[in-house]
Length: 158
Image 1 (cartoon, rainbow, N blue to C red):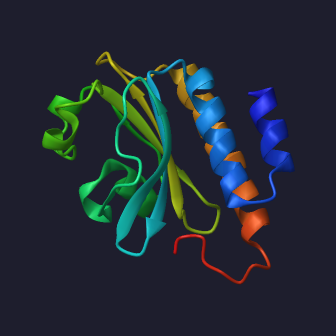
Image 2 (spheres, rainbow, N blue to C red):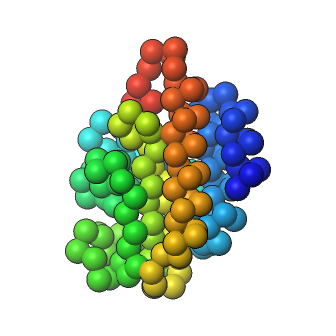
């Protein structure tokens, strides 16, 4: 976690922020996959991942049909212990993957424009220590996002 925070404090672009999340979140969470998602209007774009097998990098989905999108819209973490028991999960998209449980964390201080997801191959409740660490990482990533987009005059969600 210390390494991730130090790297985020030095990040000078969204690309660097995404790299830090992709490279550090999986270790911190002791999970089987992580993904970084960016809001693009009414869509979410899966822009990076580190996972056991490929998931959705390069894909775009309607924001309201995706757990990452819901985390962004609701501006709160979402923890799903069993993807097959939660009606919000589009299970057809997950069926061919290893994912059985997940946590999504919004990123952005003044209205989230990104999210970070952690995936596990086993169903079960999220470990409170892990979710606290990932929540801290997402909040600090939000600070970094604000800093690297400040003065750009561009919306990082587009």
